[in-house]
Length: 604
Image: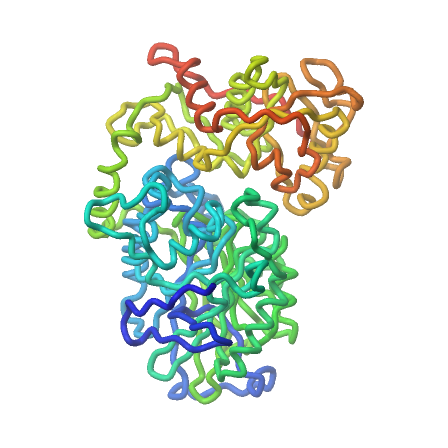
């Protein structure tokens, strides 16, 4: 059932009806002009147009406090051609950045590309992300698409995020306060109920002010069931992104809404990792690859701009629409480290965005720098929820001698990945715990780094429960299953083939498992089969091995159907196993050092 519209904003945020679904206040994104203006060289007179500011971001993941370590930095290209790592992000700074950017722009919309919540640090995750929704309300977010992580706790919990009400199990967190829900609409055009066939939330919304109308259509990636636990997507269907957006673009067009922005929780990979490098140096769209390119090429010219996400990358690209007209495709990295500022020129005569080559919208990503003033209301919110979380969050769990990078590492074998896999093997190797002989960890499940520098009063090198939770926030239950050697070999090949061919997902492996990854080859051939060994002995395709992994991987998640095994034993949660390993293997006098790589040999 669609969520009820929220009438909590200024009168400029109005809603349009759609096939029995009330559509809610929204936002704007980048680019196309009306069909009568496109390609004919005609440009509207200045007094007939108005500039609309579209501010956008994506993949916040409940990061209210500045993300720690290398996961909290962006790469910036300097004037001399070198690059510099710049600390960025934090809701106190994101709020200041967006409020400053809005000044002098009477027509300003703030939109998001999904994954506002889910996989969140303890400050938000401990309270089922209510603090993040409250912060986004204060930020005056106008609209967002759902992302895959909005389904981490299922459709019922997502509906609570939209409509409000206290948690069905944990209740209300603050005495006398009931969670009000989001002031902004969550859009889920391509997510329908298997029972009713209807969208579970509003498919689109229309932002209106002084006769200016901009429609927003929101979708998540059609592959969401492959990257979310089965319980999170139970009873739901996820339709094709292009077909869904084109369907609702036609519907909006019939209603007289000619300016349309698509919010898509799917993305691409830019050639450069510097946020301010040009994506179009060698021509429109030349600097980006991945799923969003084909999606952008297939979406109707009725859609003027695409705000994207999911891949946590930074890009502002011009990918021509099917009619050959310029259209902006943007993404602002993740964790609130960047925001995108796009100027859309709205023609009052055609009610469309001007997208000819001469008048193409202007768009750029900007760093959410930490040397600007903090937003006082966000500081108060963080302090209030932090006080509630403190007794649990500040509890010491272990000790490290240096940074142990996970999310912030670009290497196939990540130091924190080694540590997590070793913890899982240690916790599940005993016969009564499952008898695991090796452990596998999905890289996307590592959400942060372990940082040596103290985040609070705990002291340098101390790993708190809150910091460990930030690394593994899903609390997936651990599974130990039987896999044949042939299944294990196939699973390693699935890292770089099939669903993962375009965007490899290199599993993190426990000590004793070794193999060579040959990046000079393509597809499954990248995994050199005769180098796969366990404790120096070649994997036997006919032999059975006991393999530990989280329940997400054990269900075939992330494109690993070969990991669905037999004789399953369910163990403790991944976080409990990780915390126990830290406690047993480190102390203040003997802190844990970053693991030395060498399990995966990479040929380039």
